[in-house]
Length: 132
Ligand code: SF4
Image (cartoon, rainbow, N blue to C red; front, side, top):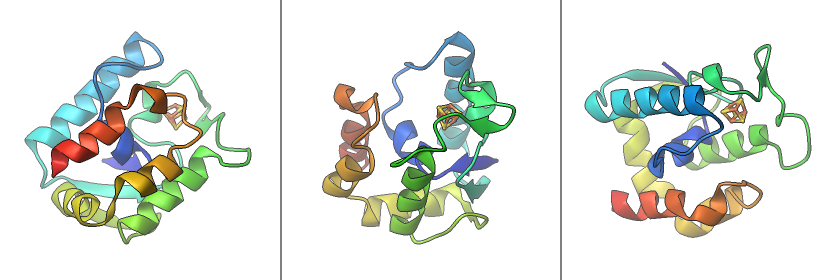
């Protein structure tokens, strides 16, 4: 499985919202898979991943939000740094989840996600609190 850094935060608070029906269905599938099999090996990236596969913003394999300041790519890299890894490395989901619990704080998350249009719902930070 391939997952980009910031999507680990999105998945914490996923409540069935998304860009369209196809996107939501696919994201639900990824979230369920990780919930049921945390031994799964994940390649960490800062580019399109298995969640982006069904996204309307994925234009021929590149997210249209990748190329501006405070872009999604920067969010990916910030998350990967906090959980002590880097793009291209692979880890089991269980190890990633442990590092999120150990190193991700609400303050860091609020800063990384400051420009995200989903932040106002508060679901993702709630998801982080529920991990503890
Ligand atoms: S393509 Fe961009 S907007 Fe769509 S899920 Fe991936 S990162 Fe998010």
